[in-house]
Length: 458
Image: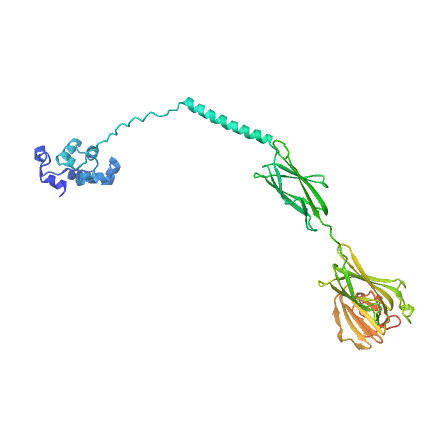
């Protein structure tokens, strides 16, 4: 049973009074019912009443339900009742009296009793610091710090910077023969300026030590003995280091070796029946070899007409030949009939050279014809002793610039070229050049004796 039902039945409250004794009819509406009825007559809901009265809706609902235990202390509840009664058009004093008559105040907790704290006991009398003592202590500390700073600065100004070289670890060093630079390293006073003076260098190297005192410097080296003098200066005090360090670095001079050279072909005194002399051999420490020949005179029975232009002392070459990765080289050298001194020279990158010579003689038998394509492509068809050469075939072939073909015959060789201006000939070692500067097709016949003649073979 709720408090509202107990009141409606005329239950005697804690003071022994009934509603009838206080002027309220026992069968009349209770206060919660009056509040609900008045709000509904006003035409508002609880939440509208909350906005208008600024009393929380849950407190208004507690008043209208007679659940007074949900309300705060009685002093706040009476204030809520007065404001709500005025808002609903009821007599606030009558509403408060009915609330008390119905025992509503018995459900409201009493106001909390304030627990007044006991006064703190006075602390025991200890050390006290007056402003004068504090100021004096601060001044003493500041004076001490300043004195320490002055002492450090005096020591610093009086003490020169330190200097030590950590690389190289010894004063005398020999490096590889191909070394061109060296990196010095060491320690000194932080921010000190380190100077490295080389005897052969006008301007010294200068570096600055870092915050930890470490420094490095990269210097150039030359072949032979390099002498360095290292010193340090404090940039603030301008005091030089007490010691200087000397380092001697030697770069050995290269030992220049002449290349080795071996000529496997031709052998000294060799005789050949054509002018395509095979020159081959091997070398070391040389990227190329040069091959040349000097005409030393005719062989027995040699017609004067086949001697090279310039006669004795005429020179062929030099011809530069690239050396393979294994050191070998090989090339043909075209020479005419006669006696020749062949020279092969190997030269190292440093300019050192080695030379070998071979004396040879050439007596042609039949016809040896070298055909070379230059300055454009050309079609060729060749007949050797009257028969089509298997090299070109019956239909002929087109060759690109730089192509070299060699043909030999007993009696004669005929060559039909689609472009005379691009076809060059060497007959029995004698350079004939091109037969015509025209770009027309032509056929030329070559024999051991006499000049080449033009034919109609096609």
